[in-house]
Length: 374
Image (cartoon, rainbow, N blue to C red):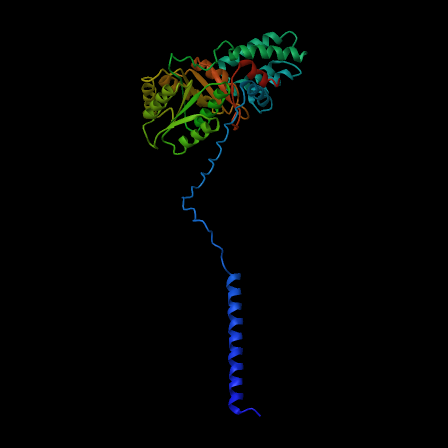
């Protein structure tokens, strides 16, 4: 039997050997875990050059609107007048559809015409001429009666008047169009619509926002200009409107545009200080360039009050043309004839509605054809 000391040494040797084996196994396992979580770094040096962010693409500029041409606007004028409740249109069509033309019929016809804002003088003239023409055959032939009415009413509306917009500026200067009128007639909107019409005719246009009293006027006018790619010159709210108008005309000269349209603040015709200011605007503008056209905007539904307004504005600003807004619908229609006779200046444009292209050049035959439903 081996000695006890030998056995003890053998046991100790086994324990030491087992510990060594265990340490080796643990060491290899740790090494394996380390390799499995190692992050491989690049062998070359990192690129330290600054990163330049690619610039963002600028949003595309929206293409300007393409305004409607004048020819199609005239077609819509006739159609809207034919479908309206216009008092003058109803009176004319009523006489054509009468079974007989006795004294009472003519009296009613005359009263209706006067009520349509045609005026006493023009009404008497029209009734006398039509009555003479129809006294023999009456209205047995409706087409002939319609033809007589058409001829006489066109003559009354005076097709000989020059209704073209005066754009014959001096060499190197733009044509300057000043738009005036009372409060609430829609001058800013009309200026925007007129700009669209001129752009459709191939003119270069600049807008002047000389209505500095109404907070939203300049912004509204610029919106109209932006829609057709037209620049707007504006000043601070409450600025001197004459100075803004002058700057607009100066900008038009420098940029070589064809037409400068000046929007002015609405003013009551019986407020002398405001009318004096309008005279000042005119005088200041003409230090830079002549005003080629002064358009008075009238609400066609105001009737006789519109004529009073027209007289006062004509005295202050020398009106050269009339723009009638709201001619379709509830307007009485006869105001066209009366305002032309009152001022001796032609109606040049008419407003047909609220649309962007609802402003049309006025023609006597187009107006009459619309009234007669043709």
